[in-house]
Length: 173
Image (cartoon, rainbow, N blue to C red; front, side):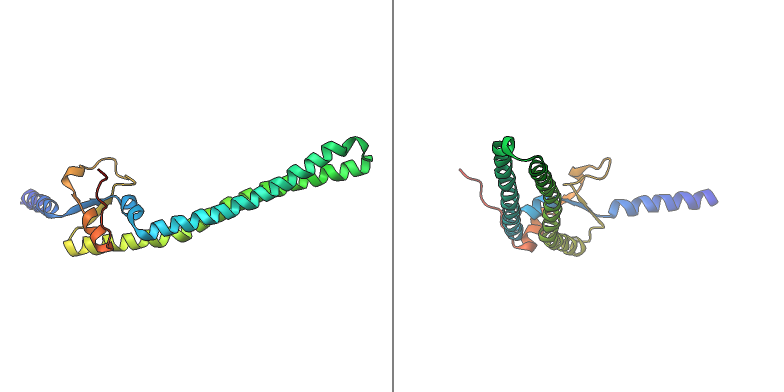
């Protein structure tokens, strides 16, 4: 009797699993088609350009001081020569530190600009999935499962794009 109950529960469980709905979407593909993403990219490029210009200014200053040092070092007193070498080392160190900080600032700015766009896309996915009764939506842009049969999953990308007001551009002829 106990085995019969376990077998019946297993059969009912299998039936329940097969009735569940699963979907898939490429979140990255959705995000890059959003107008907000284009705006974020423009802002990020401008921010990166400003950082690059500041690095170039430090590099120019270093190059000018190095050229001056190389040109005049033969006539410099030992104490002046040592001071100029220290100044060049400090400037080079400042440049290296600025590069590291600039890279961190760029990454923070990227997260600050892109995260809201990703969140908006995720909210649209959640809304579509909930409305259609999907119990799971797999993000195919970052596969984290060892295997799943994509053909067995419904692609909800078109529904998500419609929810976000994104229209696909016709292919160029």
